[in-house]
Length: 359
Image: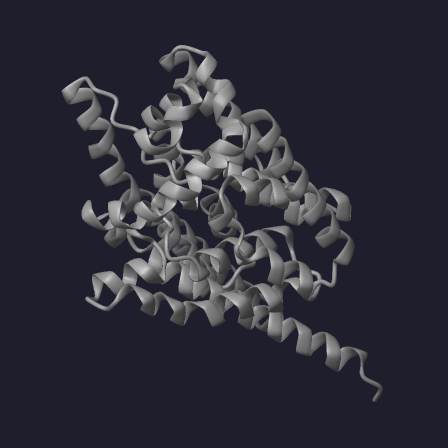
């Protein structure tokens, strides 16, 4: 009888050890694959002694005369984004870059603390997206922190306000917001989002002037052509990039929109872990967007690292998370993540319904 008890326990320990090796192996592989091109990017800057990051544009936008912002720079963000960017232009370039990176790192650390601990945060910063954003000076840490804080906020006021703040800075990063808020029937959050968005739009008109909006509206149609001419469209990490890599027309990215909507709806209609809510939101947005680059995955990689450190997640979730962490295979990882989160949410809903039904 004692042997019968010992053998199952030994088998359980062996299974747990195998799972640990699998998920940590996937984590290491994802980090290694993604960091190879990042180190080449950093090496190029060191070799040529020239800063090659996008912060040149952000700092230029912040320090240039306002009438030069649209037309002289390939800057697609709406004028409301200038409310965040312009103050950093008051500093010289290098102090500005340090302040920008430090502010973004602090923001994402505060927002991600509900999803992962100090170890997960540290690993999030050494992923391809994390290193790329800090070195390149992109805006993704700010957007990721606003979305994380928004989807985890208990108050409808803060949920709506934080998501609206992200939407007026980078609208394509918040495409999942309407479906998520409607799925959870959070009408007060929707009202606060509309009020906050309109307030920030009005503030931008007052501070920057209506002419800035007119110049942005006049120039924005040129941006897709700019991306295509430089081949940037093929580096997209969503369905659009996958379609272009396979030689398909760009518009076929729309095939991912139903999956994105379904993922947001299924995860947000019931209670779910904070990491699942954010991962579903971010993955859904990428599936619905025709323009997502690797640095836009900065926030999502923190969630993926948290999943890879969680021994209770399924192997397919670990695989999806590792593919996203790699950045190189993020297209496939995002689709798999959305499918798995939808499946788990649907399964949990059916289990809850069965438990609640009378017998």
